[in-house]
Image 1 (tube, rainbow, N blue to C red):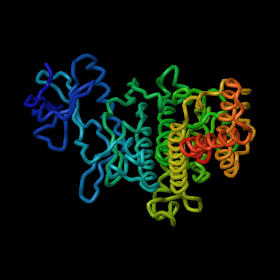
Image 2 (cartoon, helix red, strand yellow):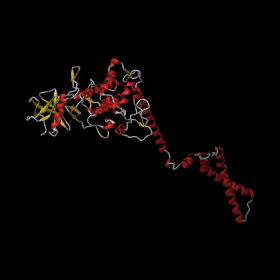
Image 3 (cartoon, one colour):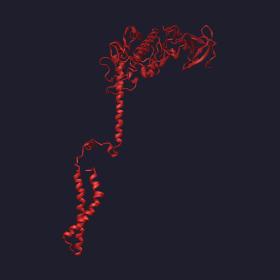
Image 4 (tube, helix red, strand yellow):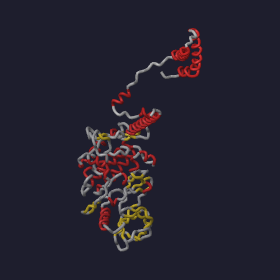
Length: 466
């Protein structure tokens, strides 16, 4: 029967405890408040299946606790890691789960949320390099303490790591899912996330004895993302080669484009990356972490030593940007934040310009008859269409007036002259040359007047056609 609020459970000393409100329920178990212990919660597994293994694993965790004590920030207690504090049993003594300290989840955020600057700004999370360096250093300290006890996270990724928004201390949950070292026994972790999985494990998975190599790789990926505006170290642009488009594929192929020196030539760095503004010793660490030889990867303790040195303000290794007070950069090196902002602004202006040109071109094209917008079927047709037609000289205004006045007169005269001559021919009468000319001229003037003022003059003078 599933546990519920109000049930009685017992600690190792057989002290009865009352379950309070359900906080969350996952695949393995549920977490409840404990009425008698406000600073602890109870995690109870859903069934007895595998109960003996769970019990041995939790006992190993109790025996090899990492050195990660609670810290105080302005009088407020902050739990760094929700590590087991004791076993829990039912009335008959059967194993149920364990107690662990209460972690104020409401005061924390996923590390995933701080990687994207826009999201971080919307949620009031830090966006400058200094706080992100502190987060990276604290994460390395957390991993180093776990590794000292031979415990490994394995499924290490930003979504599985939380941090306190005010103090920037790391907060780790669900620790019973880690790979835990017991007395002569290793309790493996089966969960992995391929975007943070080292190349040698992409196909065969993580095996016992190699968990630290995986943690070292995932830690380096997360540090790179924190210090480089969320950019994954295996993202980039193909350099004329057919490459895997997914991150796991690129990791497996060792396509890391941010190395110093010659480095990888099949893929180019992302244009928004600030890796060129990292100090040489930091770039050396990344080059080792993402080398094809797993043995070269820096340990978490080595990362913590380097990152803490940069995170301490007194060392002056990070300085405020003189151009933008919201930015920070490494002392003696250019501001990657400014360079990124300028690039993004330039890209935005270019996009707006292209949009305006597209709109203008579309409007112009809409006014052109459809037949002129037909696609050119071949190169010859395109060349023919592009060749201009010979120019034709238009008829001047003076010539138009001449033809408008004289033309109808001559036409009318010729027409009436022929008619009179034809009638005379039929009647065998000859009115005489002068009379014939006068009659023709009068008739021509009458016809010319009608054509001139009604049709010909307006058309010929006002027409703009050549």
